[in-house]
Length: 257
Length: 360
Image 1 (spheres, rainbow over the protein chains, first blue to last red):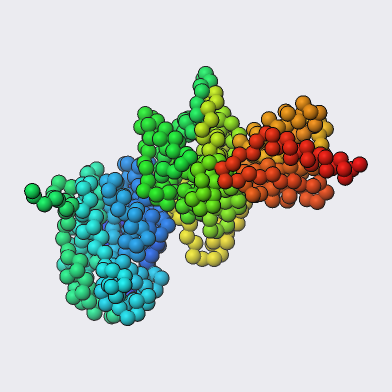
Image 2 (image 1 turned 90 degrees about the vertical axis):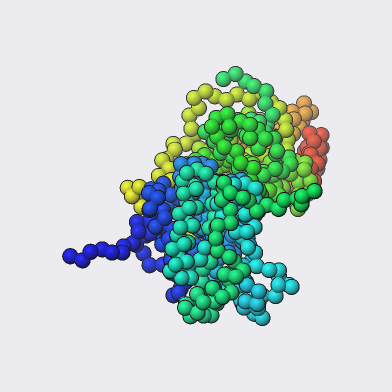
C-alpha cells in the first residue's frame, strides 16, 4: 500500500477553487489552513471573507465563516472577537478591500489592538472586477483604469500597508512575506504561524501582508508573473517583520533637543 | 420591580441590558449620545462590551460579526448615522442576522439639524438600502413603551432572524418618565436555538457561513422568496396599534405615531372639552403598518387628519389604507419644529368647519 506523503490539510475544504491558473491565492489558502491545523485551533476558528477574488473563501476553508461587505472585514472580525473572545478570528482580504475602501476599518482595528489576525493579500491590482488600479498598483504599472501606467503625479504612490500600520503605538505583530518562490512561501508560512500564535496567546493584533501574483490581470504567464513580482514589487515592498508587540515601533519620535 | 424615574435614552439602554444584550457598537451623533454613554458605563458592569466604532459604517459591521456569533447586540444612532449604517443593514437583512437598531430621528436632509423629526419614516419602512428587504419597525410614544419595545425588539429579531428598528425622536430620548422593568420577563416570542451561528465547527455539523452572496439566480430567488415569507408572517402576526376613542362616535380621526401622538392626544382632550368628538389611531408598528385598523377607524369618520414631523410620509400608507371616500388631511412640521396641541386643535376645527359647510 502506498505511503501518503502529502495530503490536504483538514482546515482546507475538499473542493476546487475558482482561482485563475498561476494565481497564488491557492498557495496562501493552503498556508493559512496548515497553520490553523498545526496550532490545533480549527474547531474554534472563524474566518471573515472579503469582497474581491477571495469572496468565496468561505467555501474553501473547513471552518465557520462570515462573508463581509467590501472592506469591512476588520469591523466584522471585531464584532466576532468581542462577542466570543475564545474564538480564533482571521480576515482574508485583498488590496482593494483592505487598502482602499476598507482603510478606516483596518487602521482602527489595528489601533484598538483587536486580537485578530489579518491575512492581507497584495497583488497590486483589482482582480475580480477585471484589473483596475489598486492603491498598491506599482508606478507605471498598466491597469484598466490607468492604461498608460500608474501616474504617481495624478494618483500618488502605492500604499505600503505594513509600514503604515507599523507606525501605530498599539502593540501588534506586522510582517510582510511573499509566495513567488517555494522558499518565500515557507517563510510566509512562518510569518502566518507567528501572527496566529500572537492571537492564540491573546497577545495582540497581527497582520501579514503577502505579495501575490495575478497573471490574468497582469497579462503575464505565471512564471513571468513571479519574476515580475521579484523585480518590481520586492524592492518597493521589502519582506520581513516590521513590528512585534515587544519590540520597537516605528512611530516617529521628536528630534533630540 | 419598583418604578424609577429615567431619561428615555437611559431606559432604552437599560431595557437592552434587561433583554440580555451584552454588546453595543456605536458612533457619536446628536441627539442620541446618551444611549452609547449609558452603555459604555452599564455594559462592563454586567460583563458586557461597549466599543466606540470608527464610523457608523464600521459599527453596523461590528453588529454583523457579533450577531453572526449568536449574541444579542444593539446599536443606536440618528438619521445621518443611520444612512451610513444602511449598507450594513442590507447585509444584516440578507444574512438574516438578528440585531436591534435604535434611530433617534433628527431633521434632515443632509446634515439637517439636531432637533426632533419623523423624516426617516420612508427610510425605515420602505427604502433603508439596496435590495429587497424589510425591517420590523417599532415606534414608542413614552419612555415606558420605549423600554418595553426595546425588550420585545430583541425577541422579534431573534424569532424572525431579522434586524428590528426602534424609531424614536429627540423627544423620546430626552424626556424623563417613571419606568418599570418587570422581574422575570417572559419573551414575547418563542425563541428558536441559534444553531446557524458561526461559533467554530467541531465537525458535528457542516460549517456555518454567515452570508448574503448567492451568485446562482435560482438560489437567490429562493432566498428572496423565503425572506418575503418572513415579511408576510410579520404582516400577519406582528401588527401593533393603539386606539383612543374609536369605540364611540367621532367626527374626525387623527392618525399619528411616536411623540406626535402624545401632542395629538392632548389636542383631542381639548377638543372634547369643546364638544368635538375626535378619535385617534396610533400605529406602534410602522412595518407592518396597521392598514386594517386605520381602514376600519377611518370608515366611521367624516375626515382623517394625519400629523407628522415631516412633509408627509406615513400619510401615504394612510391613503393606501383608507382609499377614496373619506377625505384625508395632512398637517406636518419640519426642520425640528414641533407640532403643538393648539395647532392640531386648529386643524381639526378647520376640517370640521369645512365639512359642516359641505354637509350643510
